[in-house]
Image 1 (tube, rainbow, N blue to C red):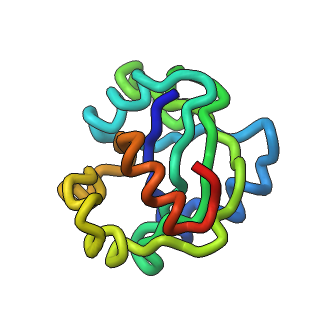
Image 2 (cartoon, rainbow, N blue to C red):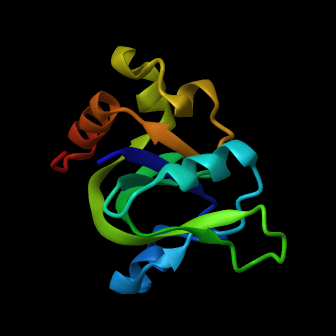
Length: 139
């Protein structure tokens, strides 16, 4: 299993919106960055990801799971854009803010710290465990 982070502006697509989709999940669509698209093409069923509210909160607020692998993004006719489907797994007990992540010495190389604008990004297993610990959830 691999780990990821999915960023969304809560006013556009929030954790509550994701939870409301249930086990069917929802396309993680609208991504128009080649690097983020390529990460989605690497994803496998069952991979886990942090659901991150960008903009105002700037915090990890939940955990999602990839429930459909890379396929054409339904929001465009351009064949070059793919997406995956994700479903909500659990909320975090304590949101983990970007400031907390930046302050943690073992998270200094996390993509979220180095390239905070990337909407879909990999998370190492060690980073996953640390953020889960900070969030009060099992890794």
